[in-house]
Image (cartoon, rainbow, N blue to C red; front, side, top):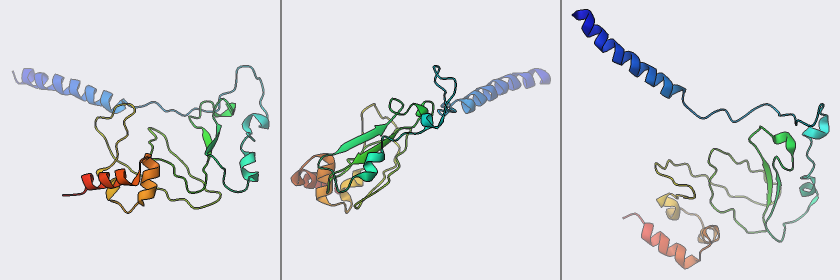
Length: 171
């Protein structure tokens, strides 16, 4: 009788421990691999791992008249295949802003060559997020960020920002 009760408790315990192990082992696969050699090449030299498309940025002086993007993804730079990475040079006109944006499962590295840069980061957890939604903290308009910067970032005018600040003010 005692052994029957013990086995009745042991089997559910064993099954639940297997379920926990499966949950613990679940997760995203590793997105990085070694360099992938193209199928049509038998040997590689240094040219495969060299991308010179961004050298034009170093030789430029002054700010551009318009926002420009110079990118290096797998299309332009095949050595990036399997690395889950791409590069981009963003050139901004003077007094412009980079609007708030997200990077799901990605990071951003900023490297400033000329001018001044103010940068911020919002880190928050959203339980129900649908594709395309961008959530902003309620306190964003209660900061000391200049109204002109907020207006440029959200493509609004100053009166709209002031209305948002009034509506989101802590009560």
